[in-house]
Image (cartoon, helix red, strand yellow):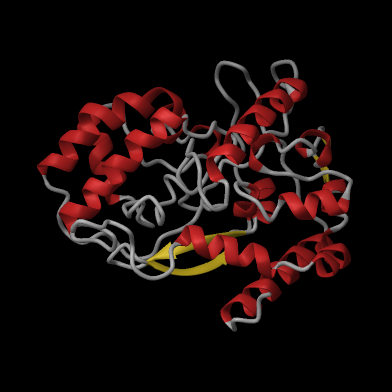
Length: 306
């Protein structure tokens, strides 16, 4: 995937549509997903998703050099943009940061599902714009360098040696493969009505997500919506990924973001009072999402993709 260029375009579109959908304090804004599925918040490029979830936990390690890098470089770079939700749980975000560098290091390296893997496999990188912003290029570079240092010190897949490239398939590659497995006819039959799903007091999903606001793309043009959901970060609303205890890619699985987002406890940004509205998808739309995702995963697992 042309991750960097796509991500920059997505960030710009998200900013524009967020402004367009902003309402007065106390009302609702349809602003994407906060993901309570273990995916990193405020994260940048990548093959789509992921929250992607990781399985297992990193091997013991995380020596002083990587920890020092996190505390001196990573935490100052992301504390404001990411910590406003991921150190507090605001907007329903998973908590993997804290108020200080050392406490944040403990939280992020101990978070389950694990976020510690080389950048090609980490959901800190492979998440993109969501209810929060994507990482800026500078933030992404700092976080990626730190993740590589952690992989080196912990002996994770892709760590150490002169060539840090992970052996085997990466999460980034798996997301591209899943996209190639998606079928337009199947999407039209099962998910064409998703953009028209109603929310509480905020109208149809397409009202804000027609331009990809919040990392979710749902326009009334079925072909366009299908094409965009094959790309990062929108594909992360469909599937996420796991890594094993050695930080190597393990599997793809449904992320259920379209289904679960409306059912999660909603909170508002304390400064802007912007909120994501609650919703409960009609059974037919929910079943349609599950059908598309599960059928695509089955083809992918059985190597039946084009």
